[in-house]
Length: 372
Image (cartoon, rainbow, N blue to C red):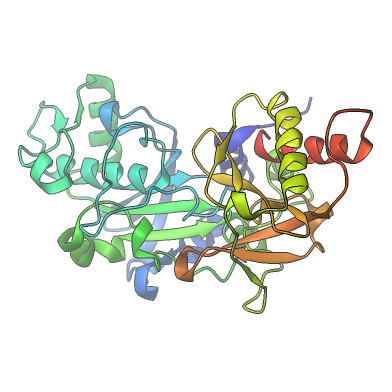
């Protein structure tokens, strides 16, 4: 019998199953995490026991993909909440304002930095919890987090937390992502966990990141065999920014009205045919481009033109290996610049007026990429 895990949680499950009986690998997993400002917890060499809790439901605080409890010989416990996304950290996160909060919380609960912040709030609430009581945000939650208070009421889950966390645990918060091995976590202030400026300054060393590429580099998982290999074949491709460099050209799009009119019409008709195939994603019109956004809000495809050509690009994050050698371009400015893979440029007819193999192939590539 073969068991295959699918989706984001499936990848997490496969990693745990491949490490489950190997304590040395579990320790190396913890040591591979990159914490903010290169912080290294001093207790790591003293860990003698590691426990995993997979996707527990923690009431209004959410459902973390994984909780790791690392215990020292002295019985001191360190609780690590792991939130995972099959994409780069910044892409999976909500952009914050200058106070390091989102402008709104509605419809962004699944964003990676929001989920990390909710685990941080749960940890704070846990320390204030009274015997037998709920685990709930302090009364000042709205003032502290610009959000309504959250609460965990379910007795069985409160008991689980107390039994597993203990009474004076240390809490840490880790993102598991598709970032490259050399990623420096939390460098872009726009996408920090929303715990406020003072909260981040005081607690930033409690936040870390580990990527699938790091796990593979450290031989913690095998991309060729085991549960991880099976789930990787289904949903994981190349790490974000693969093949990109500082020398990649930066593209500044021009407004739609300045595109060559024939190319504009051609691309718009192509988008009509493409739109008929999309089920969970949608096409968004901007001043100088069309974007296709995934269900979670990530921009995965950019289509645009100028006076000479049309261009179709895929976000350089989890792209299939078949596009490894395609040209890279940058779209955006500064820390917000993103690497895209140029899969098409030209003036070919992409309309559906007649059988068009090129258009069909491009549509198939885009649909497979955005709705995988």
